[in-house]
Image: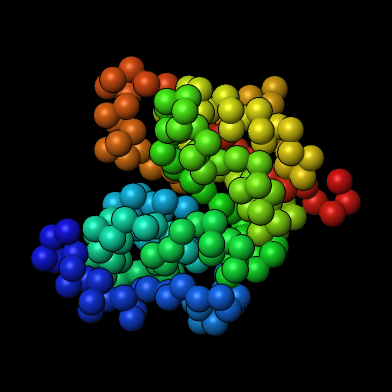
Length: 213
């Protein structure tokens, strides 16, 4: 962690940070307004999340991450961009979904390049599994979107098969396959490196069924 990141965690947390607890969050209180809410799980260094929040000030963004240097980096970017529509939590995603995120409050949940745990003996550690998806679906509003991107082909097909088999979700891509990259998902340095290495980048885009569907 750099000195600047450490300083950001100390001086900017009160402005952008949300402490973990067992009490449910109230998005309207958290952001001091009512607006569409996007949750990003595992934002890395936060560059793309900060850019997204800056480009779309009418939407509220809540980012979850456990890597403190990445959180510090995002806080510095949020300060530099004078963002008012971004909040950050240093917490395990499963815990905050179980305890704090209210049902049917998210307009979109996004998970970009989660750890693929490519070795077969480690794949049980992958984030996107049946229980996690079921929990996350309950947090989406009817019509709310779930957007996942990965450059691990095996993980991409595993996620796609799991979501296609989830009755509450509808694939937004033609033929129930992978989706083109939405314009709001900016290319990251990580992704550009993946392209140079010949990795296929897969976007997976689903929506929660409406109550009448």
